[in-house]
Image (cartoon, rainbow, N blue to C red; front, side, top):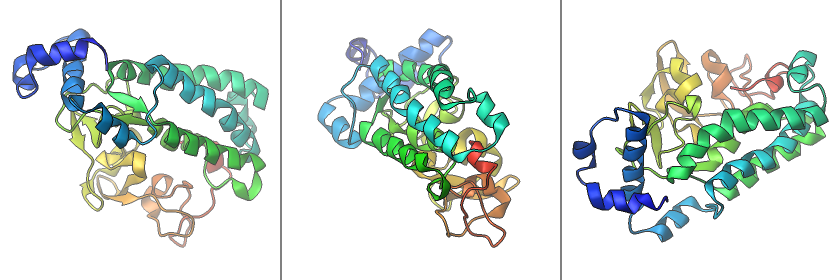
Length: 279
């Protein structure tokens, strides 16, 4: 947590931070609100935060975001070129594993790491190295190709790897997800950033809007495997199915971990086109 956070906590207090500061009128004001929220969320319990995070990293913020890309890039490129056979997709990633390592390293930094770094610097999100290791292991298993390609490699990065960053802000705390796109859950401890504040994930089976799956998983617990399953604007929070489990063909891209819902209504191995795509 930045050294300024305890000072802001003392100056503004925890119980009245919303009333005192109000809505941010600038990027700086928004950052101040988040700093106070971090100070209040974490006050008095560095030990509790470590316990909650499991494998919480001791690295500096910039080192945490760099580690995400450093650890993920090579296993991702190996998996992609082992599982995806579409020349056009592979061309977008450089056309070879070696070129992919260079190209994806740059896009990982600009599209993922640079979006997370401001939050990490504020102490609003912390890398869980245990979760990151599990994600990397999933990608490495797919290097063998064939039947080991059980999930689209890019989907693994978007779901498991990015979700290795664990939010630290409690529900109700102010947050800013303007730079996060579909990663709005990153600053929040048990929810997602909606309307400028952390809000609890919708419970399993709760009503949600499937049309928001691409940006916020309908408010469902995306990092822990839930999506909004349904059609149109009517759906419910459902855990993404494993191979052989029931799925909703109306939202097939999201109702299965494989991103493939078969005609029989069960999750199947990824189709050739799905292996080349992400969320």
